[in-house]
Length: 400
Ligand SMILES: O=C(O)CCC(=O)C(=O)O
Ligand SMILES: [Fe+2]
Image (cartoon, rainbow, N blue to C red; front, side, top):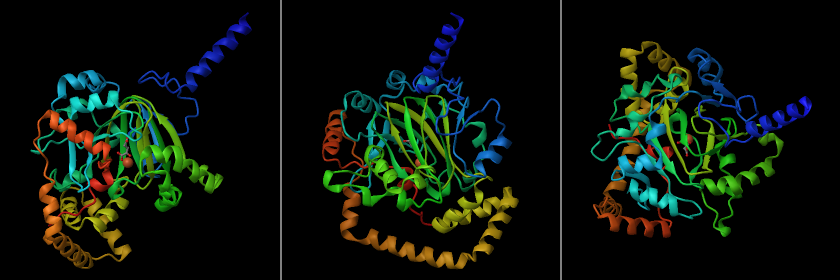
């Protein structure tokens, strides 16, 4: 009898621990089960240990108990979001001219409930409204203790690229394969739902994992997360075999868990269930060297400002930047020349009458609710809304 009980208990425990849906928020009963990724508990992992074990060696992990007391768990349910923010507009993509498309939350929540799209729309909002005043939802969470150092704030809130996003999407929506901009690392905490992740280490080239050659355009396959997970990834695994599959990190993220994505790792995410999350990108002492190189090479105006500020408040890092430049044979004057060339190119684009016309005619409309829904529907049907991801959002250099 005792033996039978023991067997039953073990079987129950096994069923509980292997079922990702049977997770109690904040208390990870699956802690000791292989989830395909390292899981660390923020109650016992110190910041120093996190930097040593994960941030500096660039190893992804899941962190539990980082968000137990966030108001977001109460305030970001579909019901509360509807009652508190239904009239607020959120970004859910961009049109063919690259212009941001926004939708009122009440319409998006309705869309989420009813949609049967193959690749649905996804709110990916950097938490600022048009007038630049910040959205109240950013008070509903706290930056976990591991990610408090935020060196890019030194370039100024207006000049720095977008760095925090509120994410809300129905099942089958997601983020296709990409590398986060400027070599920044990121954290991503799931409030509700279920996300599937795949991550590839930085030494596997982006071209290989993007696998354009494996996309079957004749079958209308697309550059979307759902196609990536269901079609491209299996083909990629088959093509490269164990050499690649042994290096891939693949797992489910459960509510209350924070995923750490080190800079340079290619990754894709699929919302397996309707999901709501928050994510931020950051630069810290731990990833400074790679972020500095990326900023220096891609955002010259911002790099100059950043270095000036670092000299004032973080002279140790300013010295590190100078040493890196010297080691790479990088000079400010060469960069300036390149920057001028880029600027000329952009100016030529702006002066092009065709481009200017497109720019003006794509201004955001102040349509009433019905018009907005109709327009949204039309765009969805035409499939002309493209997901706006971090990569494109911050890829353009600002004038300086
Ligand atoms: O959860 C998501 O869809 C977004 C994940 C991501 O990779 C990103 O925001 O860069
Ligand atoms: Fe990302």
